[in-house]
Image 1: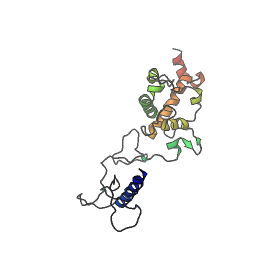
Image 2 (image 1 turned 90 degrees about the horizontal axis):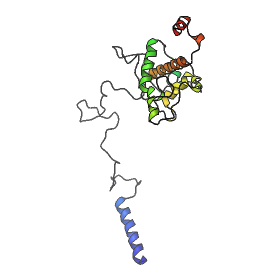
Image 3 (image 1 turned 120 degrees about the horizontal axis):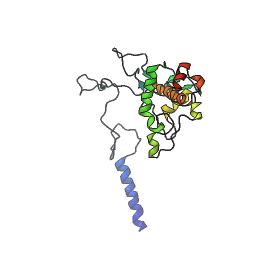
Image 4 (image 1 turned 30 degrees about the horizontal axis):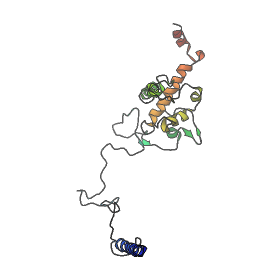
Length: 223
C-alpha cells in the first residue's frame, strides 16, 4: 500500500504548489489566489479622490454635531454658548489633575471647579442617577442593587473612603474598581467632580461634629 501512497502524496504536494504558487516571490504578474478571503477589498485610501461623489473627495464630512472620541464638551451644564466655543471644551485623557485625579505619582486633594450651590445640586442629581442604585441615598452601601444580590458594594461612609484624597475617589469613579464599572466614558469630567463633591457632603452629613455646625443652625437642631 505504501508503494502507492508516497507517489500519490508527492503528486498532491506538487499539484498544490503548482496551483497556489510560491508566496513572497517577486513577479510582475498578478498572483493566482484561490481563497483571497478579505485580502483585497474595494476601498479608498485616506485623502484620495473619488469619482463617485460630486465633490470629488472620498472622505465624507461628519454629521453635524459629531464629537471625536475623547472630546469633552463644555458642561455648565451642557448649555453651549451661541458660538459653540468654550474654554472648557477639551480632549480628555490629559495627564493633569483635572482629568486623572493625580498630581504626579500621588492622588491629589481638592475640587478643580468652583463648588457652589449649582455645582452641588448637579452632583446630587448625577449621584442619584448613577451611584445611588448601589451606594444608597446616604452612601451607606444599601442601594437597591444590594437587595438583588450585589453584596460587594462599599459604604462611602467608611473611614477608609472618608480618608481617601478627592483625586482617588475621582479616579475610582472614572476607572471603576472591583465590581464597579468605569463611569469615565459615561459621565463628563466636571460631573464626576460634582459627584465627588456631593459624596463629601454626604460623608459630612453623617459624621459632622456639633462644633462644625454654625451656631444659628445648632438652634434648629434643638427644635
